[in-house]
Structure formats: structure tokens, C-alpha cells
Length: 133
Image (cartoon, rainbow, N blue to C red; front, side, top):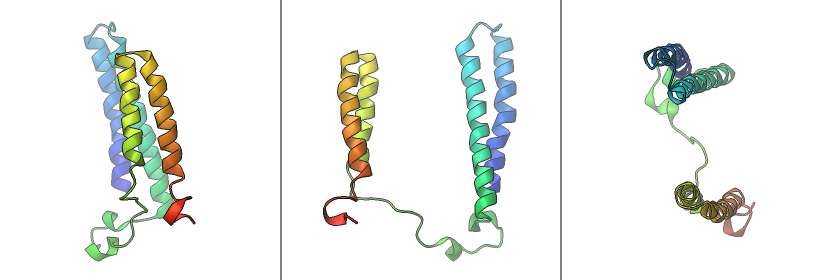
């Protein structure tokens, strides 16, 4: 993860000066853009630091070595639920929440309830039925 950590870490050294240049070009009158670019620089720094610490903890991956073979990266990459509908329901609930910001605040209450049901369903989908453990 060395390349990824350096890439995101370099984002700090790019976005912080860009935010200062943006502030100078707008006569420091447009604070939303300045703050947004500063926050992007901070986020890039946090991601770069996380990837750097994780890379030191887990060691070299096959993607990090120039002499690696394709078969070294084969195998299980994680646990995914291809039949799960809960991510779709949670995404629709989030879309409903943003719709509530635009249309009416009462829609956000309905979306929050749906999001709570979807999140609980997604977390506990392996605790019931055929896939219980």
C-alpha cells in the first residue's frame, strides 16, 4: 500500500496550497470553496495516514512487488453477499433523506425509519433463516 499512501499523502501538499491560491484569487470572500478544498486536503491526509499504517501492519502485497505473479493475488478477497437486497434499501433510504432536504423535512423522518430498518436488516441478515450461524 506504499503507492496508495504516497498518492493520498501528496494530496495534502497539493490541496492546501490550492486552497490558499483559491482564497487569494477570490479576495478571501468565498469561504465555502476555501474551506471545502482545505477539508479535501485533510481527508487526503487522513486516508494516506491510514493506508500507510495499514501497509506497515500487513506487509507487502503482490500488487506492491514488481516481480509478483498473477496467481499470488488469487484467493478469497473478502465476504460479499450477492443476494442481499439490504444495500439497495439503504441506498433508497439515503436518497429519500436527500429528497427530504429538497422537498419537505417530514420526508427525512420516513427515510430515517427506513434507513434504520435497512441497517438492522443488513447487519443481522446472517443471524436468521438459512444462513444463521
